[in-house]
Amino acid sequence: MRTSCTLALALALAACSTQVTRPTEPDQPRPVVRALSGYSVELSPEAKSQLPDNVKFDLDAFTATLKRTLEGRNLVAPDGDYALKVVVRDIRVRGTFSAVMWGFMAGDDHIYGDALLADREGKVVYQFRVESSYALGGLAGGIDSTRLNWLYEDFSKHVADELAEKRDAKK
Image 1: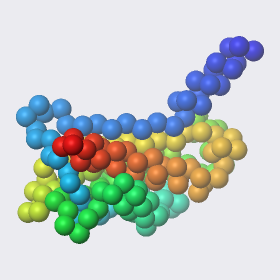
Image 2 (image 1 turned 60 degrees about the vertical axis):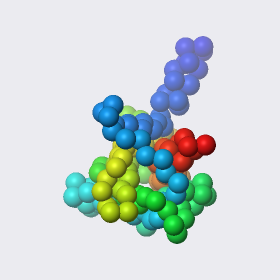
Image 3 (image 1 turned 120 degrees about the horizontal axis):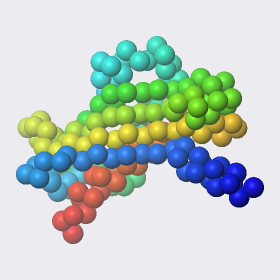
């Protein structure tokens, strides 16, 4: 019984994950972000080619979640000093049946993307990568909107956390 509970707990903890990868170059400047003047979300050519297999992915809903998250953290202002572009480079949304019946064995749902911070002239001054995944199955994985909303919010939260860290570094 103890082994089964330990295994179930380990699977539950491993079912959802996010990774933020920052640049490894020691000489890359770490900009202090006061606020964003704007933001955009686009799909890479690879992600666009994946859309026919991932019709449940909603770019507008993802963009709206990012907007709500950034504005909620006071990271957007008309006189902001940087612009953010999020480029989604890989998406995967499991079918409902696969998510319920096979769970993590059917792979994961995920959004992988790059966040590019550009100055007023459009030069990219900082970038980082966010990889968010969700692999729960059974009833927890059976509601597509729940899985996708979790992915949208988790990805957005980590983008906002990284930018807020840059903003708060000057304080």
